[in-house]
Length: 150
Image 1 (spheres, helix red, strand yellow):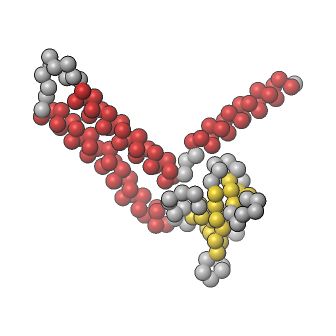
Image 2 (cartoon, helix red, strand yellow):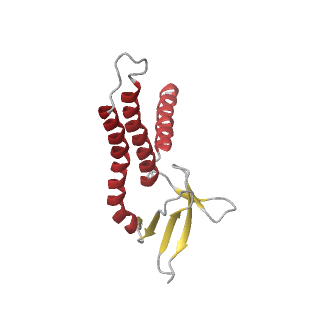
Image 3 (cartoon, rainbow, N blue to C red):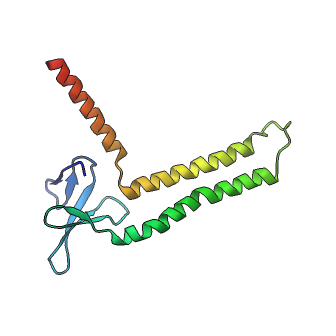
């Protein structure tokens, strides 16, 4: 939504100048519609040209996103619940040197699985965090350089 897609020199691909993803332009079987497919990701992300703009052509992924959201929540909650129940059912003696470790493990399980879920979500939703950060830095540098020149 932020960048411009331009042809890559000496290649049959396109590239975004904002997120640095590589795209392939495809034709439908009846040659009536063009699709833009992201080539450098595992996800099958596609957009269809409407004549005025590119629209999401991932109807299957939109349908599956509910199930994926549910599975993602389970990915975080089930291992955390197992670790927390183990801490509750099998408490450690307070005098043991590593008495803090089971509780730490339950908390680390939650945050570890949450980080995995967030990284998968970031890839699935195509949110280019690094590209936004670079854009903000360029904008700030441009504002800073512009003020110095005037």
